[in-house]
Image 1 (cartoon, rainbow, N blue to C red):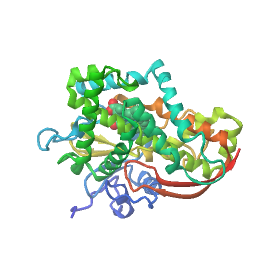
Image 2: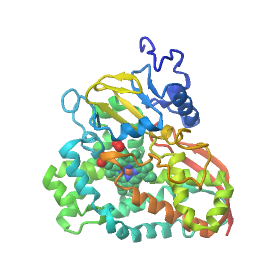
Image 3: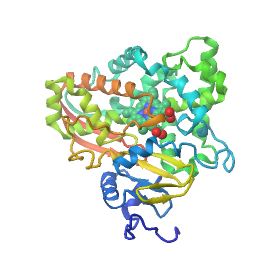
Image 4: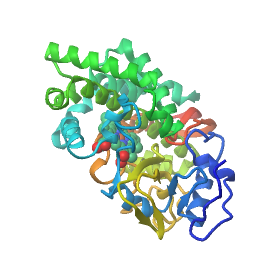
Length: 403
Ligand code: HEM
């Protein structure tokens, strides 16, 4: 069905077997994505799959690829072969002037002193969902707060009424699934959930502009509407709503998963709260919520000796890069003592995540609140999501002991 299996780095014997697990739409949560990545990195760090996409798993190559301007963010066929969908207008799929205009409008609240203004909103969500969490016994932290805190934060920051939060949860599940299905499906036909979500946020943008009372993240909305119109603005508010919480949800869950597996780290955090920052960085490295990011070369390029044609889908495996032993000694270990080695969890270059400081703030405030309540945590049960792009838990049951 895919023709001859192409050679990569001189290897012909890399039968698709488990590697199918990295393919969009084929990952099953129960499979060990890290073992697949380890094998791929060791045997073929630039791997052309039988389905023709190119997977890059080594740290140095992923790092360079993320910032390489010859690798475009715009899916090929845009506006010509494919019907234009709301997804095409998302900031992360833009280049050049459109990218600059949207990014400039959206990033203002995240830089400099702007971020401090977001703190009360995070504190309110932590109070609502974490401050009174049970101190003893078994608790599913995903159901209790790891999803609810980032949801409430992003809704407050974007002016989404609390009564509409269930809508966001439903759309987010659909977008997650779309990001897992592959680009041909995602960009053709305009998936209903994305269109519905975009319509909602376009309506919200209209209302907010009419009221003149803009919520904290939307100071740049009037400029964005002026530059690109209300529809593109609405589509990007939808993107911000998704990117601004679905990732942080998994930072929180993945962090608690690893801390429950590493009791000495929980004890160290209890004794010295300055380690909270290290716990967040180590989670982002070891269990990156965004496992992969796609690019399309504008012209033929060479990666580690492999020639790649213009327009090929290049999948940069952030999750694999962040466990590269050439960059991180003993990479599978959760180690609060790691310092000075940059992980790639937030990307790099012109499209580097704009919400990093907010995500880190949410992680730090949730973890601090939990350290106040729990002396120790033990793992009871964990169900990973079936998703090749977003790495996180559907359920995480821990047993807590009171502080
Ligand atoms: C742990 C949490 C998060 C992770 C792991 C994460 C990860 C990423 C990554 C890897 C990219 C780069 C995409 C690329 O290069 O194509 C990105 C971009 C982006 N992120 Fe985040 N993110 C997180 C939280 C947030 C939050 C809280 C917000 C906003 C409230 C946000 C908004 C964005 C936006 C708007 C972009 C697109 C930037 C651009 O294309 O110029 N993210 N994020």
